[in-house]
Length: 351
Image (cartoon, rainbow, N blue to C red; front, side):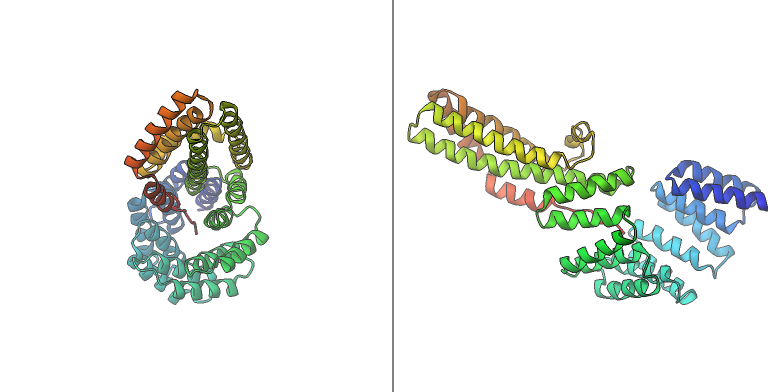
């Protein structure tokens, strides 16, 4: 029995280190000798859930609850799994049972709030009330403050949400999800550089968190969108210079000034991103949805067009301008960018 508890403690430490596959094996080793070990079954459920093997995780936890039907911690873990499976109704049932069993445990109210947010029609106001109860029961727990921030964000109170996320970070400066969620609110406000800095810090704390990488992709898409808009403006200015038959050097100077400004913008954001983001960003084409691919195509098209308008001889620049204008009319650039602006900013929050 002492050996089993040591093995379970070791497995839990592996979970803390995000070595989920190894933790799974340790829990299975315990269950091989004691198939009715409730802590091992719950730990196995958590390890499997972290690997996105949600169905297996649910089976393990339900097996534990058959053995210990009054175990509130089992319902807490089950709520986690069902939220991840997007079974909001099932998660709410599990969370309500946990509240009945342990009404003074902040985790019960925290999980209840999570379940309310996971419903097909989230009950955000009720989730906020449950989150506040969790904070009142555990004022020094950063997870509870982070959840309140998510509720306030969903209720349209970004200032309150940011304050809650900062409360979580004041308690735990390395709280990955609070950093991620605060970055998401900064992205909503168009503060690209601040968001990139927060994500850089979060990735340093937890490089395996998938939501961080998704939001880093969004930072790159938003940066690309800004560059596309600036390219569009530069094309208009250079087109006017061509139409008025301004000297070549005026187009060249304008082009150089534009390149310098855009280069500074990209550099200022890029320096806030994690190291190696250039290599990681090269795979963004494969990860992007069709809207993102459309944005990348527009970026390349406009870049070539603006370079020709700025530096090519007059006759070549005129031909390039006519061709560029025709292509953009076909694409419906303004409508496309408006759609991309809506679709690309699908910020991923975490709780």
